[in-house]
Image (cartoon, rainbow, N blue to C red; front, side, top):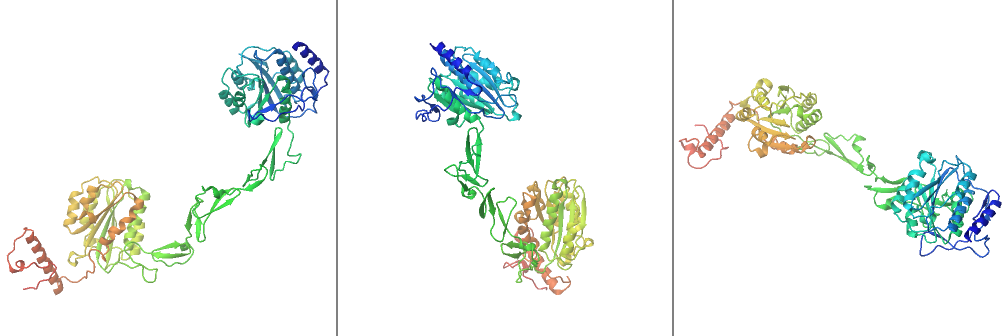
Length: 621
């Protein structure tokens, strides 16, 4: 009986003119609640035209899909009965007649599968619809198992290959696979289908009668409600064909109007969706657009204010501040660069105003601009600066800046503090002696002009040079009789390559108060050996050149006469009476100290009886 129906159907189809189709608007039932996303196709209504169980309706003009590579994957397992397979054959023929096939339009390939996969004809085989229909009518079912996963693998690797006629990926021609099955796959489909989708293949899954819905959903592309179809019987498969044809036919539904999109309408295969302009997002009705408040997300990281724009969040600073290059942080506007602030040392901006600051150890005066200097005093200061290769040029510039910061809080003058500078590496070079410059400005200018030596680190040689030459009167040091304190400051960043012990000790024996400043890889033991006692007051260290300015506070109290040695010293002739009295007081005080330590025993009333203040002067006999 099934064979008779098939022959009758073929005779009817032969009478149909070009453009006839076996599918038209058959009634569609509401989606099945049990299936969720799949589109369920119900049975035809009573008034639908039927010929021996087949719906035969004429379609309109053939639509143009544009370039498309389309492969049908047909289940021909033993569960598909001959009559049902014949229905599927006619479904393919009718669908072909609705397409604009050709080498530059839609290319069609067909494969069938059961326990194995067979290519009916590849994409490159035919460019005429008549040749395709002839191959489909000659199709013989395989009638074995249901290896759907194997068929998808074949379609992905073979049917959609360039060798089989698919256009190359760079041509950006859509690739569509339509899988028609009536049962549960006997192999796994989810993983291979995901691979196919990842390669850009759009998959439609059509299940008939006994098809497994879970497998259909695992195979199909998203959204599932547009790519999964469940048909009650093979004779209703034409309803899927009608809907599928509507998706392929690129009708511009946006151009037809009535879409209701507030901003943009975007056409797709057989459908459309609304989109919004930049800076807006789609509202809940999927048609209206509302401005995006990018600042409300809380991830803008703006220091001050956040402003939402079409391009995203933008940071804005409050009045008196400027936005930094990171486009998030704000910095007080530098008014110091735009006004004649008059600060002697440094100007600091503060939003709408500014103020002057002074270097470490100097106080801001009542005028708010000038800085105080150390109290009148007398110090001969020689700086020994490490110019070895390990310092590196950029750090040597930081060292020179550090030296000038020391000079800033000294009262440099021929009668006050004299400054000399010695640089050392593998050799020693006097950059300028104690007696050369009489003002701080001259000293600072000379410091900036010092050229970096590089090479080794002969700290011991530098100490010897300082002891033998730098504090000589020929170099500008004041005579010892004047009691002007002599201070040596050694600046180094590493271990000495020669012995320092002898000349470090000799310097202290000569009455030179030694300070050691270490940076980076400086050796603590060497710093302590160079420095005078106690080491805690005469050794300073910084791990990095860029952070060594904090050492200024440590050095200020020692070098500046206001808080350290030599404060208030008055230069006078050693032959004056007051000088002799002061010398006698210091000498007797020293002798008494030695006696108390059992180093010296002296007889006489001056060292017996009550303990006398060593600083108390004694009368001459």
